[in-house]
Image (tube, rainbow, N blue to C red):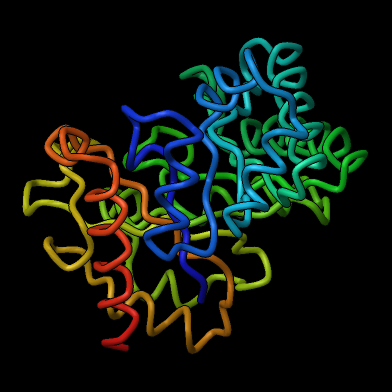
Length: 269
């Protein structure tokens, strides 16, 4: 399994600062945050971005977040995803992360899955022109896609080879996803793992600001990674933490502490 950091972990800093610091800390990959990419491209070219990544020996693992607006503005959703796929192709990035929206309350689950699957397939057909995958992210206690079962229902209904799911250990924990469910995941459909820990609070009270460095909270990260290792997952583990306390630190401290907490976890397996 390979090391990665998501730019959300260093949110107050610029894309250029993130890339340089992540590389110096020892990470192999980085997930690019959409808003930071847009800001960078206001004054730089996509070629500049590609060169910056290559100069710092960092693999662009994903661009995120994008939104699968099945039940909203589908046109804007597709346009945004195509924009991301076009950039991803040019910088040799293999995937975009997409978050689900919420169906109307009166819609049956089966109909919502069908609609979301059809739209996910449309989006994957667009990104296939650029050779870019889409990873659907379950969200903690989301009313439609709280865990891998629902995400896989959408992906399987869509039936497109470039569609898969991702795991965020915080969201899975908040939704009560069991180790048995993780054990049953089809590893070939697991495109990426966001890894983080969290405070010991009632799950319904957990928010992104309660995320912690690995090993400082209550998520059974060692058990999760042992399962993934046993199943043959060899992809990236991306540290994604939204925490004001960490954001207040110098960027090199954040990236170093993030890398060290991930390395310590991997060494304990």
